[in-house]
Length: 114
Length: 111
Image (cartoon, rainbow over all chains, first blue to last red):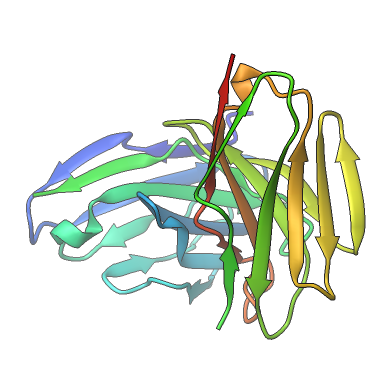
């Protein structure tokens, strides 16, 4: 099993451009989520999904959209990139939505917006 | 609001024992999880405490006290490879598994 796969690993965007960060898991996990990590800020929740067709906002959702059309995929869309969105983005999934279900993280996408 | 507070840095030497504390403020507390992240890597799950008390997993142990709104991660027989960032996390009150993370504690282990 590949686990949680994120693409691309690195991306540079100009202000105003849009792009989609891909996330796929092959573990039949019910729950998927996106975090951003900035120095000294820990991991902040952007959006999450408890199953196909269901998404909800996290702590810092502004400027991002998500959809969950299949169990496997959970793409994150940046609508109009801003320098404040320069960050490392992690996708994570877990088998169930129970609080005792560990999160499995992808290797991250390092995004720079100039 | 909901927040988890932990020290930003801890240093120790090989073979020592170190404790990383986590205090939380939340209106509805669930369990407490710990994750490890090596520099440049993905966070990985270490432990989860659903109830008060100590959970032991090899050299790592995790403790939770709901009455004190407090937990800690205890690392014994420290090795150089334990140098990493450690995050405590708890479920977001409004959203089940959606975890809220502390800002992380950077552990530096020296020889």
